[in-house]
Image (tube, rainbow, N blue to C red):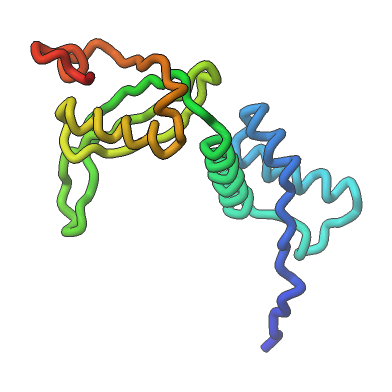
Length: 162
């Protein structure tokens, strides 16, 4: 039985190609085909150089997480906007439960910033989570505005989120 050596694994990350593919909205399949075709053009088509869709998908996710973390570290927030939705998710006992998920967008960059699941969908719990995000990023002094949609939990009879 032939032994597979560690050298046959492709450990290259292709960060520039992955970043460019994300910027051009290329799918995982398209990105995989592009990387493999360039390797073929360069005459580097041994089994240890070709990439799979799984590898490309993992690298895209890894790069997205690294970029998100780097953006969070250097950002002092001036304005955030948030929106929530109720989703069915599995709990520890594999039962479907309805859970509130809130996405936070940073302005003026207009990009995804963070997300959370509040203790409940009540305005007070959402407010506490948002204040926690502001405190975590040292933005309590630089913060100017908050935006949301017009749902009753945000604008209700008790003034919603404060």
